[in-house]
Image (cartoon, rainbow, N blue to C red; front, side, top):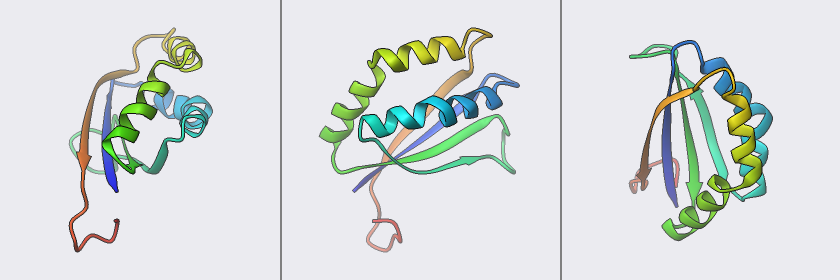
Length: 108
């Protein structure tokens, strides 16, 4: 199993809009494309409380490439993203890492 860590650094004050987009649109499209989220987190204590961190599970890099590309180019996603940003940009930048569990990890 491969895990992807994704951290969305929001434009100040726009985290609520990002969370709403995930709740109402993104998760349904993840399901449609077979993308498996593991968990979603906001920052309680840390450098910024304007971040969403989440993890995705992948069987392989090939699966990630195929499913992520299908999601990212889905016309429904492109329209929903554009609509959600009518009041301005939501995400300033995204940091993504692909991780493999250690032999002693509880998550495999």
